Image (cartoon, rainbow, N blue to C red):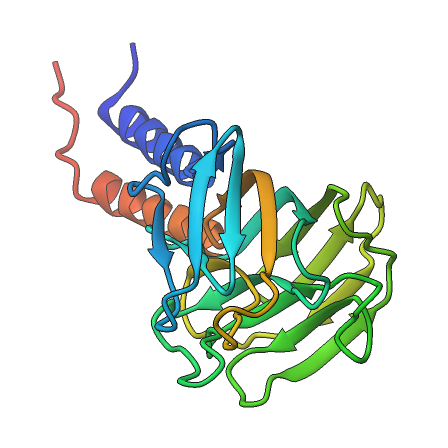
Length: 248
């Protein structure tokens, strides 16, 4: 028969295990007819020529439209597939650690967090087709860059991991990260997905399609031992103040 102290200790252990596995998860294959408002908040630029729509298993971003997670995802890992289907002056960006509310008044880009940007090899962003940048500065401060081949009308997969102090980018089935940056900059826990704006209304259309996104956020690992110690302390205190066993 279990004593009350043993039962209390087991309940504490169960709480620790529950916290360790309490991951926040978002998975969207865009198989419906409209963006799911329980998962995403849609952003459209003030120019009126942007949109993000869902259909046929894809989400299509046009001229600077974006999706912002409806819930927070600290220490997040995000993966998915994308392709450039419009003008080759386009960009595809993932924002981590963003507040989700601060935008550049002219370019209509997010102005917070860390940006991971992909661009077509036929028209890269000056220094390469992939970069990680500090999006809290204007202009963005590039932290690392690479130059993988990214063709138009071709799907590529990506995976980004964020430990809270290090961000790594995997690209096109790479087993090792193509870019890694150490940074603790943090403006929030919103994830944003955007393509490039088109301020010239009527100009070439920027268009990106994505057909799958998965986001996972896990509790901060260093909090788990602290919780365990705290609960063990509670157990000892409970044991110390427990009434003495009756003598017969």
